[in-house]
Image (cartoon, rainbow, N blue to C red; front, top):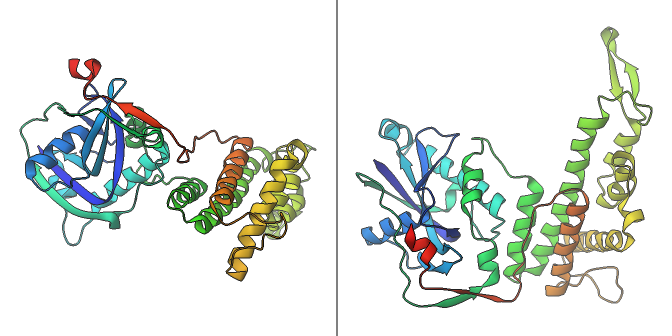
Length: 350
């Protein structure tokens, strides 16, 4: 069988067992499977071209915490010519980029880099059969808890491999992960900007979706829709109230009047403190964008451009997403360490 070892700039963290499947079918791309990252690591070492950052970090509760600087894709023999890289065809990189987008979305591993332009090399190998993972770690260690919390699991791999060929994460999710990554890199201005953009995008998108599914086709008197005559005897349904509210493009208005109209609830009414924080976030974002400088801190109108202000921006966005019904878990780099073992009876028994 043919295996493509794709290495890129950056790394991915995994938390998998040696008893997990050795490869995972990518259902949107027949003939392509994602190889178990532990086997990828063994293959990289055997080629003597591996990055030293690719490593097994240790054992934890029946799994191995591993980091790699790439992925390996198994290509069926009959599909080699279709996916093998050529100057005029980058299909394999597109497949890999789609997979990385999905893995970042499901794991919330904000530091993951996505996009075909991050791939640095592709090495093709021919093997008769896939070996079983055989991780080894000589010493016990402790790693930051956030490294473990966002490591990719088997269920997340399965979810990513089941995505369609055109899968794209919601824009607000990508923006919030970018904000989280910027916060970890101490780029607090960018973190606040991306948090505000994520919030605005999420509120508009989620209310639009609810409107399209529950309001537009409804004849209920609860909605102020009207039928307007058009040329040729046609009629079109309009909702002047929603069009006016949506036209403001203001997340604060949408969280109050807009949400009250569409969701029958208002953030201002239910949690004024969170609503006020959203106003401060929007004001800070506008100050930075339009004046190109941090806000003055003489009043509490703005968030501070530091770790505290960035954390408040991220917390505000996550809390409002939760209020809107988004239950995805976004993790900041919180203090604390997790102990990893050299080996584990559960993993070694497989």
